Image (cartoon, rainbow, N blue to C red):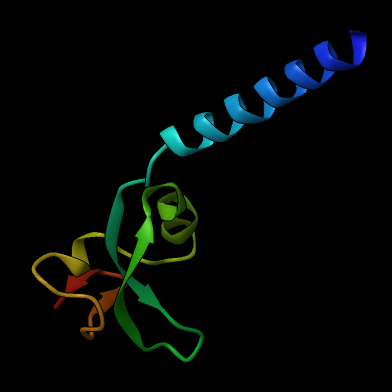
Length: 82
């Protein structure tokens, strides 16, 4: 009886965790002008949670405005150019 109860509780936990993970859903996707190591930049699509890390190393949300994924973009130190 104890084994059956333990098995049922374990199964309930696994099912609950699975449904919890699925209900998180996909995060919002964001277009950002991504500067590569060679200085070139292009628009990429990233998870909204990755935006702060990209902004911290010089990428720009504004430079991607009106552009599509894969387009070239330009981020300058004095502002944003397209």
